[in-house]
Length: 288
Image 1 (spheres, rainbow, N blue to C red):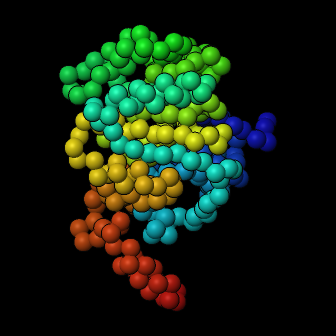
Image 2: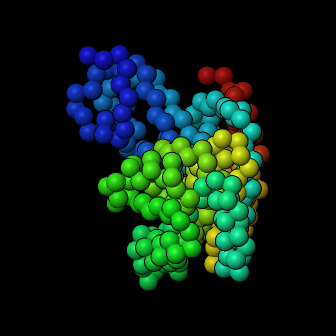
Image 3: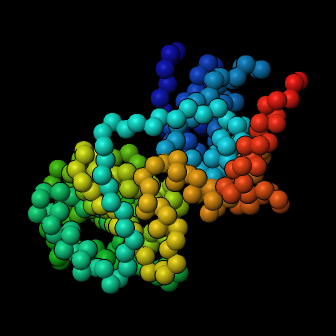
């Protein structure tokens, strides 16, 4: 028996979870609708269902649309433990020499650098170098370069050693959450236009965690970077969630099987906020 159970996705595959009165899901945007429903069902008893609290710094478009439609009750934590100064900038190939100079300056101050690649190995479908293609360049230019990715069985050991001894970490989005690197002040995201805004926000959150001035460089070969430019202008997770809703649409807010994409024929959840507000006011005045 237990009063408090803490676990990962693995809990979804246990058949003997006890009935619970409260379920809390952290990083809600990393769980699918069916996964959350499955977890709720596992700890329910007949008609008795638990209270369900979900946490997210960057809600997915469908969740954001549900919040704006008041299908979910929402509490906002608007304060942060400390002020964080992170400058975000979109860069391209012509900016690479200046980027190298900046990396050298940060390392000279005993700060650390994180470089995120879209793939571990080369692919003809991706117009960027992979992690393995690039590592030789960085290892030749700098000392104490560490490498890890999702298939790396020694990932945790690599991250711990990098935290103490490393200058540069080459990785994939596997480092999006779950690590604390207090000396990390500069992150470069290669092929940033290929990633969702929620993922970019999580990656940017790896730097500046101890109050040091930090930088997030979004490296892109694309000339159409309006979405990235909009992202660069805010560090507020819920503003970014609204941008994500604007660019990706809400999906099916009732069924949940489609998490993004346009589902309404005559309504845009991101653009028609005034219409949604008027509808909510009218519904609020209806006596049932």
